[in-house]
Image (tube, rainbow, N blue to C red; front, side, top):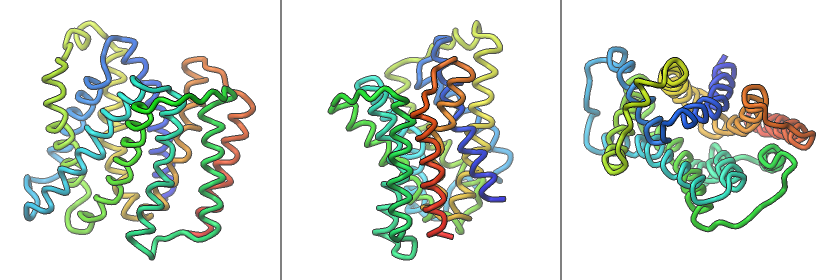
Length: 287
């Protein structure tokens, strides 16, 4: 059951590429999309997460702030500006290193979750598969130091999020932790939004395309998926859950082909098969 929920979340997150692209085409900037979806998610979480507003002690509150940064504002800003300053293929490939980097960090800090030879082989196979899916037959790799550095920062942010949340799980409800992520994600994004400004006119004139996609991103991809993912991290462990993110580019390229009409080559299909083989090897070790 846990794997079914985790897989469903990965599928939904893979589909958000299409919703985000449609919203950008409608006139919203990435920062506004993040703000609106997190506002929706936070408002929905308020009546569900109880009356407790502050955590027990400033140390736990600092951890919650770090979750809002690494899983929210900082991750979002670094990833989107990596796309602005770098090449899309580079950014996609570097961000896809998240499961591998998470596995390495967790293995160093928690020896009990360290993977063996089968897990290493599975990670390498899945990573090669991801590279094939990301490039999709167009093997052009150009260096872009600033963009690549920002993409790596985004990758590191999500790895740190997966680690930091372990410190709060078991002490607080999943509802409260998730609400804190949204709340501090919004607060830490505010200075950037004040600097960039917000174009509210798009919300009025955008119609069902804008509101429909924002509702999906806020209610489903943010609230439900963050709740489910935080729960899966507690049930499966950081390494096993994060490795499922290897499937993200597979879902993204399928939805892009179906909705946006983008081409999928046989190389990308071979990459998807390698990702599945790699996940089987990893899970066999961790099972």
